[in-house]
Image (cartoon, rainbow, N blue to C red; front, side, top):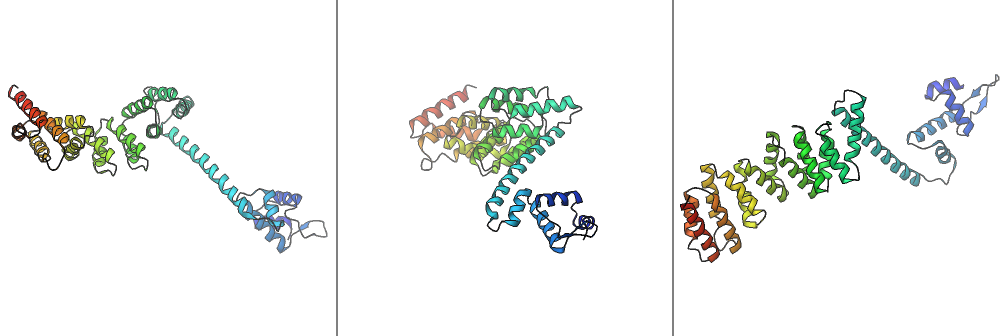
Length: 333
């Protein structure tokens, strides 16, 4: 079979076949009377072997060794190819992410593209100061929200983290859904950053996602979401907030959130009943009973008042004194 026919059937150009011949990879079996190269069936099988190995990423030098050296073992070379392929995929994925983010910023011209590229580089800088400036610069330079979310979820510097949360709060309603994905990260620090960032976005979407976080598997996420949602009037936070007071976890903030909820008379009675139900001396230690007594201070309604009256005669002097003081303060209002 002449070279033109081989090229047509194999899909390998005549020029490449000549290159293979020059490297000693594929030698035509003979020549025709006119001096043209003639390839036998074995030569064509060799061509397909070469192409198969090339498709794995082997260099022509490695292909030649694989086909001709009986002692050549593929394991080491394959492992190296796997490593290099992973590195290439990582580079290509990073490039694809950067291009997508530039596209999301909807640049109107190349100056806008360059601005976004500079911003992305700054957000990934090793310098906290540069990252913080980049976050604050989003007030005038539109930033891809996905990039801001990624930066916020991975930021360890508290000042930069605050700037990134501020930037996300200004970025509209596209950030909360991306942040919510961070609530399910296997890394607890990422879950914490996600709920803190959501808490600073004053939109209905963010509030709904925080409400979903009340059932998160991470108790820290549940508690922080409850503190924020309590101040937004979400009644479902009441059990968690009461637990926080009992457990002395951000108990002052939890009590403040309950006092906001108690502006609704119906919720005030529910809160007071919930707090009173946790006061049994056999159930909790004295310090927790004192914190509950203090939490009743800003809960209006008859249930809270009656509970304080009962506590003013409590065997624990600290509880009794606190309850008596709070009752006296109520009568003077």
